[in-house]
Length: 636
Image (tube, rainbow, N blue to C red):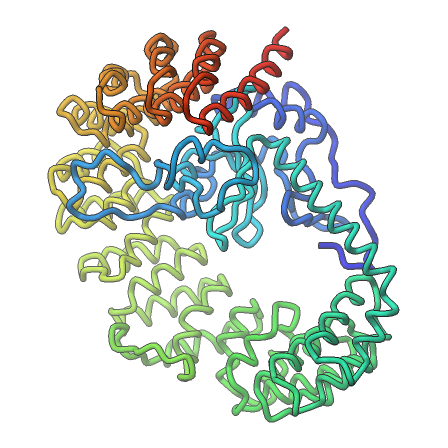
């Protein structure tokens, strides 16, 4: 977000992508991009903002992308962030080996509701499995990004667009990239109207913020409103009165201090200096962040004094952020307070490397399984173990390996940290040993899944053959090889491993995995048939057509759904017949399957769906008819 007093960039747009650049992207992705996103690239090759956030780059920022990606950075989510691609995956009961349904690909409610218009779906209802096939078109900003879903195609050829966030968790879904931009534009226009109203009423907001006879909550709300409208120095007296009043609830005092930290005028900093020695640690934690990055020597000195005090709780130290590194370092050098070392590592303070290495070599830990969770306990040793990897220094990596040798129950955690700091070679042996010891929390398996090193696949195969678990299979999915597929295939008759095994073979998407899925499908494995359909493997076709013709509406629905993913034009006639099915779920999904492949039979299917007895099916038909006419106009 751009603060009220910061200069605005001239534009968030970039130079257009050439047709050659767009075609090169489509060739790399092996797909035609949806119309509105393609048109967007032709107007601007990415943007220095993205929907939902408005984050921009200007003023000489060196970051390659802080918004919507250029063509060279767009990629399938499973390739650019495999961990996020499985973020919404759900587990299934161990006895679900013969299940037809898949919680990651089936709507939680009716399919015709899932395909409804914008704004009618809860973020948590997004089909999590679609992340594996999603196209990432923006930067990942703290778990939020913009995605396009090729598994949900509208009648005008548009892909569903997701404003996705891991903290929702889920996605605000829109029928197209253009619809997402339109919704975001409306939201920002509404925000602009609200901001304008706040600016016009800023005098009244300042007065309320400073009125001691008003409720504190109202004063704070008015202060925020005035701050958003550009007020600064005028807010200090009222906020200072709240911050200094120990009779006011601590949380409200903290909010006042947070605002003073944002104001950062000399008078505001003076208030923070005054209260930073308050006996309440939460008050200190709210004052420290701004003091530690202030240019005022008095402010920095006050922060150093508090941080150097060994009695200062760790959460106060942890309230600082990266620009505060020099202040935290000075506090450490003056006091020798080793409790500051973990946070110095987290802040990336390179001057602390030697001291961090020495502390790691002197580290003594309880076995991981014997460490109870206590939010008030001293976590210095464990924090050092976690944050040391932020220094990304070879000496730190070597010291972490020594800690793992002394404390084998912590091997998996340490190996994970080594991988995060780029020391995968040192992590490999530790991960192998952790798997041999049982890996009870699946940390080693998850870490190996995240690695690009080919050795990770070898370690996982060895472990899987020795002692198969669902976690190992799920991890091995991201290391495709004929040997990996065979190792998983040998376990598919195990009830507790069947579901995760089919999923892993689908993710692998190599010939050996596809052949195993086809063999399972031939033997009647419904989940294998559905996985083949999503991979657009023709060997699922006959199975899916048989399902579509089944008298059971449930089976017929899965047939229509599978054919929608397969997108084989030779199935159009069967799907057209199914578009007139009595069951609305079958009729809607069969029609949508024809739409997804842009079949010439779409108009006839839409006419049949428009006559359906179900009102929601009729509403979808009307929406799709309008969108199909747009496609026809564009084609003409």
